[in-house]
Length: 456
Image 1 (tube, rainbow, N blue to C red):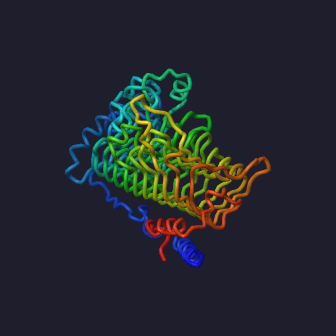
Image 2 (cartoon, helix red, strand yellow):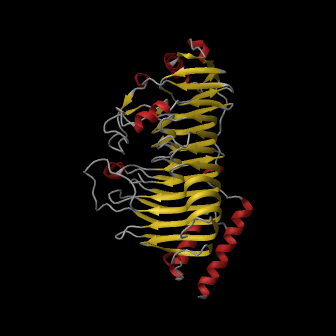
Image 3 (tube, rainbow, N blue to C red):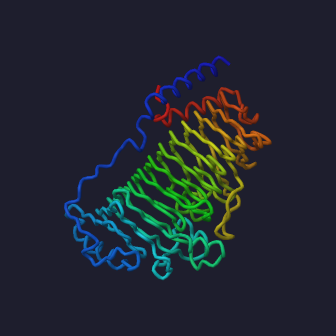
């Protein structure tokens, strides 16, 4: 008992120091150096017309083809002035800055023929929504280095309604496109933009390294089906900061592949830092992990976030057949309000790509720390349902106060889960009240691993 008390004092000290210094050296503290490009051209030079009616896909394609000639000369910038620029999908190149001036609006074509169909991602094995290929995203990059998509608060409007109707009516020929997708790319910056009405995802870095997403506003209507704001997918060294996101399903969702395809591809999402974000999600979660997590998700630091008006606040999802892991997650300094379920973890979420998945490929969820949380108008404090053969373990809760609303019928539901809690109201289920030295030591060790949040 004395050992537990000493560790508790140490934990409290760590939490207080974290609150003083705002976080230490997380991924977001390593700012990319953005030197001005030595060459710049305007999209007007390639015949583009910003009247909202003229299709400018060829103008964007020709401009970027021209700018490829500067990749070994310090790179170049493509400047988009104020106007309404209708376009289909187009691909970027390395050492490029795409700059959208204030008043510039990229408008996505609603004609599916203006969207190329591409192969499914190898870690998913098929289109996520429809077997087979998928529509290429509006703005794409593949195997690129040093790409910046930024502006003076310019706008990218995905005009998603037509895609949402096709999704809801099950009339899609291929899986829906996203607004921005970078594949197998390095040194990526997306900043200072507004993204509206994505057909599916807003920003999707997949198989990427060194990604910085900063000062982005993303919005899709609450009724938009399965729209997600930002999806780091099998990517590492990712920073998401100072963003405001409203989505129909999830605001931010971390992923890493689907069942046997994600297991075989074997690329995790790791070293992710999320801070100072305002998140709202209608039918899903403001911050989600999974359920497509077969490559693994680890070493994630989330701090100073505001969550509101959502079905779920923070949710961990997986199921049999996924394999993989969700581990070494620290989430702190959270304010949430008008959220149905504050915290959730389930081992029974998600479908399978085909009948080739291995039902014995069990995921594991371990070393999750939730601390310094204030919640108002909450219906359910926590819902944790692990898998019998692979229980969720070392769930660590500290300094959490949730005010339940009058319609709340219960505060916590748990099964096949274990952990430790300190200073949590309402009182968690017995599975999360483990007083053993080993349980608390595991919580404290996780905070030491994620030194950004617990520097003594």
